[in-house]
Image (cartoon, rainbow, N blue to C red; front, side, top):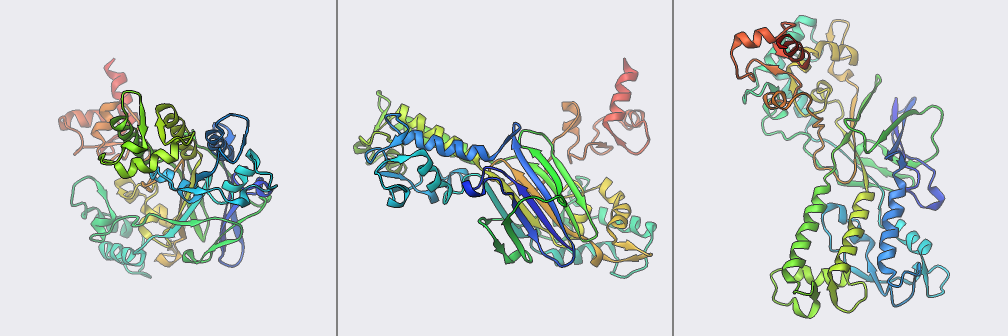
Length: 454
């Protein structure tokens, strides 16, 4: 059975393709499963932000505000390749001479439609799809089985799995009540990769992920419909089949990378500008950040007088923020048949005591335990998908903590409950608060104890 993910991001494509979803498909023979993912921001299609970003750039070059660019207003423009680097914190794109092809009707004047068409074809504002296969899955599975003292094909029952999980729990060398991949497989960094393989265009294919292809087509009635809004909190979507387990979460964006770089540029401008809040190209030689300033001034100098005013710099910052804001990233991680990932239900990169306790149920549902046999080869393929408003370095799902501040502070491993080792007070107080007697303080336990104290 194959799998496909349909990413419906209307408005992110060029005009002829604006209403076509982007389809990420993994072929595998037999029936193909599809998920239609619609992404919005404040209820509006995220594709509109791409047009907004390019409109901001057009207005920046349109000095006389007549909604057209003549030869003097756009002799040089920011390179599309350079614009692609803005969300990554590289804020000084090179300037290139305006290509003749941008003026489609050859009248010597650029209208906003011509300007946007040029950048839409090459700047990749809007949707980014990155993907890759995570490393060391076979090694991780081997180390996990060795730690559990179970072999493929072994006769197994719930008691055996419980004993195997107890063995895993002894690997908690840092006593944080979580089993990390590095505690199972020494030196393993999980997930071990930051996908940089960009997938774009119609009928593009990426062979590194076992016949992964990215195409654009209309959604069909057979698609599973998934919808998320970038302004929602704690979005998690799950889908399981015999062949594939898909988990999607909305990740926190690393907009700070661009913001930190922008703040650094502001500091450079302030330190170099005089009392008139202007930075003259003729005066930057010998300054500490000479190279950066020599790139910044031609880039943000709207009137091309070799003097960067505070107003011009503010206007360029608005362009940068609009462009960074326009980028939505879909990251696809293929963990193949990784047993650790299959157990890590919340995809935080560690196994909690609850996830270990749930192992029998998890593996029974996934077909790993069937007919009294342990069959790791039956584990569905594990795909993890992240959607972020901008590039995201933290691929694992950090989620958000619940409860009062003191509860969150005690919950060192962020599993949503407090163990006896995490609780700083006496055992008697802990036992009194643990209303269900499971050895942990949940928010429900805490609420009941507080109610009794009133």
